[in-house]
Length: 146
Image (tube, rainbow, N blue to C red; front, side, top):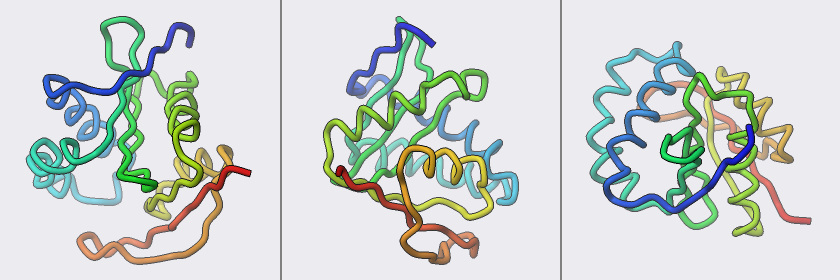
């Protein structure tokens, strides 16, 4: 997709960012009950997004996706379903790589599409863990600027 702009979000963007997170989480994590995501929506709105360094990808006025960073931890990358596979996630990852020398993230092992995406962006699995809240296995992945 052409004309993708990446900008730091403003407080007024948070509800739309959280809506993207919620909708994509439900689709990408069908192995986790939907009420888990619904129960975490308020924390995303009031705690996690405000404490993160979050950037939105837009094509003018429309928000297509976002990335959230906490220091060198990649806390979230979400792209609206209808815009996935168009290079938006790659643009967001590249933006983060331009501002960090190292990135680390956790993601559910069952989310094979995302695991493949991150591997294609140079991330490697460095550990496995178990998410305390869901009981699901996770990969810890890392990227280093070489």
